[in-house]
Length: 316
Image (cartoon, rainbow, N blue to C red; front, side, top):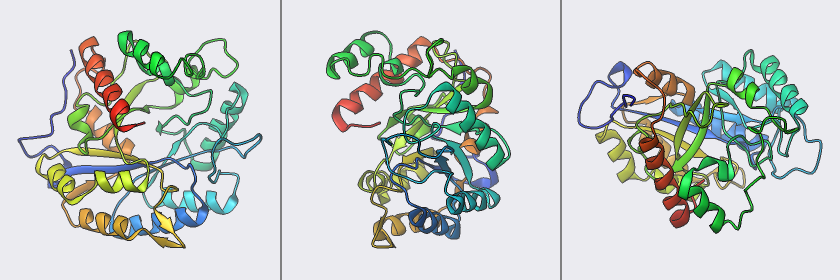
């Protein structure tokens, strides 16, 4: 059994006397260069440093998502600027379409050349090389129920962890990337739902450590998660939030930031929060661990809550 970090009832958990920790993990789906510039310039100006995931490779086949890739030199240059001022650049698989092992190797090498090191963190895109995704996120009766409800569509779709498959890259993930996002929940206090993160799981050996996130995948969901009451509760509970989103989905309209997004972030920025990238938060939590292995009971708790919320709310 591992020790968990608890986030309520006592002060002193966060550095510099901060009352809570907050970050955003943004996937690039649907995101243009202009949207990226507008959103991240605003975040930087009001004091946030967060995480943006990228596709290193150019599009080579029919994409399954819109969004910029690092093949756009202007986009890449802006990402490098963000990294220089303290944002984290993460990995979102090789490209906005499924990739073969050789392409994932190429993408990781490009990432290293663009940003000076391997990615610290990643989130699966819905490519076939996604690792431990679909039905493989679950065990026991939850896997059977998930397969029943999805009519088995995801039984064998995701193969990044399947040794011998031409899309396998589990060894690369384990060796190069520390943290991989898994379950997403509706609670703003991610650490309350998953007090064991970052955790390792003996059933998923190709991922070094997993982390959870709070659901803000589109602007309406993001704004519900970050409403005034939830902001105040996160502060009161001295919690930690990793808010998962896609800034390409509803945060900018006609060249202007969503005004409710602007208001919510400005309100949050006025609080005494620790506003750091995802890997910085996870590294901090890791230093408090005496063990990282998830127990069967803990796995059951995380899986059951995620499946229940997915059925009710459609979380990712």
